[in-house]
Amino acid sequence: MYRVKTPVGEFHIREDGDLIEFKPYGSDEEAVRELLQSSGSFQKEAYTIFWEKQEDIFEKAGVDYKEYPGVRRRIALKISDALLRESTGAEDILIGSVEALDDVNRTIGLLYSRLAAWCQSAGRDVDLEEGIELDKLIKALKESSQKPLLNFALQVKNLNQYRAVLEGEIEEYMGKNAPNLSGLAGPILGAKMISRAKGLKRLADMPGSRIQVLGASQAMFRFLKRKGSPPKHGIIYEHPLISKSPHWQRGKIARSFASKLAIAARLDAYSGIDRATELREKLMERVKTVKKSFVEEPKKLRIIKTPKAVRRKKGGRGI
Image: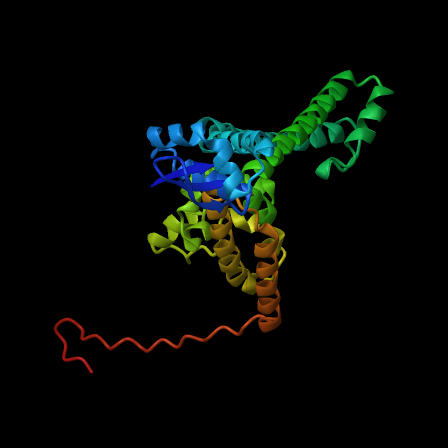
């Protein structure tokens, strides 16, 4: 008996090409997974027999042979996407984009501070926080003779526009290659986690406890040197569920969030099945439970230290 895996399912055939059993795949994702797993166990003799009598085999299995080329093409494209996703080059581009985005954000912050100081020295009082007044400032500067200040403001605006383009490229990549992480944490934060872990598969192999403190290496080193308390969260603090919650709830929410992120990363790395909605609903249920159970900050326990034993003075009898 031979087993032949195709984009529509698995065929069990005899040596003469007669069909024994046909097991159809339930979805395209299952077909891609099965074909990738069997790529190293190719039997030339089995496939030779199958291709010689494939029309008869398809007819006995109840599969429309005319639709098979379309299914084969669709699955082939998805396999190509999966292989590209696994290639280091694609992830290197993502990691580079995330690092570039961090650099752009820092640069924009510095340039906003410089522009605000320059405007103040030039007698213009504007609020450039978040770039709300930037367009108004540029319009006013065009009507004045302050050309150097105008050119500087235009460069800041151009950098803002490039940041939007860079974020759009990251979101597009995450939507195609990491839908669970993107749907649960957001595309930018999900990409930052992949970048910190140096790859999606490395992130998927991490336990939830490691993901929870990913990006908090300095705080962890301080704790290990006994110079502080252990960190409760790393870069996942950027998510509003944690950053906008009271400080006494953040640790519990971070633990639940990290455990769901670990599941999301494994789904993206090894299955490709999108379960972001389900994971998000379960996370929100847990967050609601935490917020109901810990409405007020718990009272801190007062630690009463026992007095030190009275030491004997050197050469004395003591007390």
